[in-house]
Length: 158
Image (tube, rainbow, N blue to C red; front, top):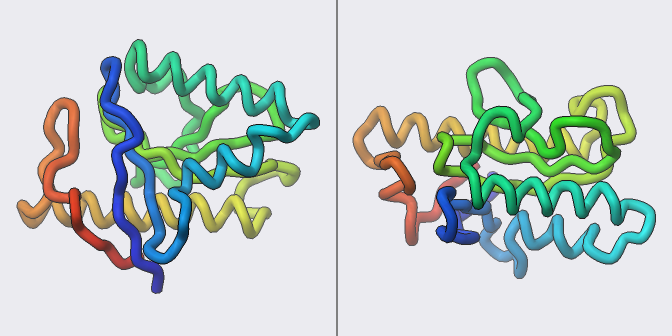
């Protein structure tokens, strides 16, 4: 079992963005993604498309059209980019104003389930989505219009 905390990436613009941080890791999940692909010449275009999409999301809102549905029907896992590309960044789209950014990688299989790495990123987000839903049901976590309350300085097991 892994323990995580949530960190705010930014709250500028119209979207509050968070990312997952595994306790004991130096970098958050989004920072790991950036570190892996920022200087990758072969995937530079795909990486730039994802970063540009995130800037559009921050400016305009986390609208469904910016994301590719992933995961299962009962979770909020999605991916950037919507159209073609070999690189995927997995997220939880909580609302039009709240986004939790996970990690991602090179998609060289037909589905993310066929890749151990990508499947792991999606499963981590699915588990955290379940924690949020359970916390909301129990009144421990509150999702406001622009933030998630009750998760700061908390450690969760997934």
